[in-house]
Length: 480
Image 1 (tube, helix red, strand yellow):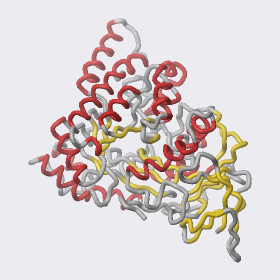
Image 2 (image 1 turned 90 degrees about the vertical axis):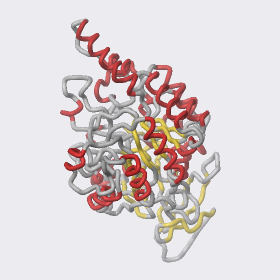
Image 3 (image 1 turned 135 degrees about the vertical axis):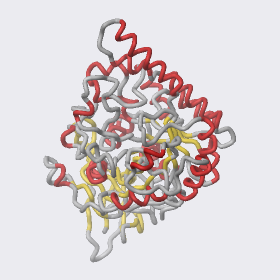
Image 4 (image 1 turned 135 degrees about the horizontal axis):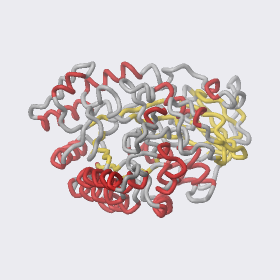
């Protein structure tokens, strides 16, 4: 295939370049001012801006085990619609969690035939699970036992390393099937991750702050004879919870902070602590777009953990993004059905939003088009940096010969208005409902094949998915 008349984002360029792209066997063969090859199909990209396919390195597609919330088919369709060509799925929100090689292979047997885009997986490092929980899983986790649990954890990490692009753990968790690690276990895990040349990802909120703070704000609402308010939730998980956790993590990772990655940071000062210590960190569009004041309008549609913070944090985080302090932007895609988002209590409403479909459009419009970030920064934040951090950059993350033809075609003169019911995710409740972004993604290409084509059927989004489930390819560290 020859793609003609592209205005394309090439590596290390601060302006779009008018080029032709030659694609063979799903790879970019050449890029030049003009390419003409007889008998090759031609795609005229006049009027489009062409970017590297987005990498969303933080999604919860919930399969197997929680598919009433999301699954790989719907999640990957939502991603493709939003210009994402590769996702990396978290280990904690599936049954069993991906804390052993056996669990990973069990998960693969369920998801490998479902995705319409490429995907990689994280392994998990959980706190010790009781035998009753282990026994409830639908497959045997032979390498995970409660006896000598730290040794078992390290052995499981070794067995998983060849299959995953990193490991994930929590300092606070509400999941009985994937519990928080203590500081001693965290230290062992980060040292092991460094030895295995994989990053250790951390959900960094301090349980020693949050647990008593939550009890306090619940009791205060009761004492004042009022319903709990969203301010109570944010106060219980305020900036101090992130600051304390990230400072502790960086101290505990002393000598190995290069292996530490902090996920979904909502507090700018905490992100600076991580960067100054030599760790990497990510944030998400909802932390850049919303503050605690927006709960009044959006309620549970905005609930995540960590929650969005004070109004000033949005601009502080944008400043860190524009100064290359944050490594990349991820969605933390974690939808839930309406009955789980609206339980009648702010404390039990599910914390998570459908984000993979709005990640790229938001950053294109509010970051690149608005002038907050440069073209080079935009491509790094949406693809290049994540590809490098997770060992996928030999085939993903930029538009250049030898790499996969993962491309996003944006019509810059059109606009995109977010409608939750059309996201293609199982989750429809989004805080971006009704938001209009500059630019419209008309085509998404994965390995030279168009997987999303909105040129003719944009009013019927699912008809715009052009491949069968299972087209997506499972990627491992060092992918080429």
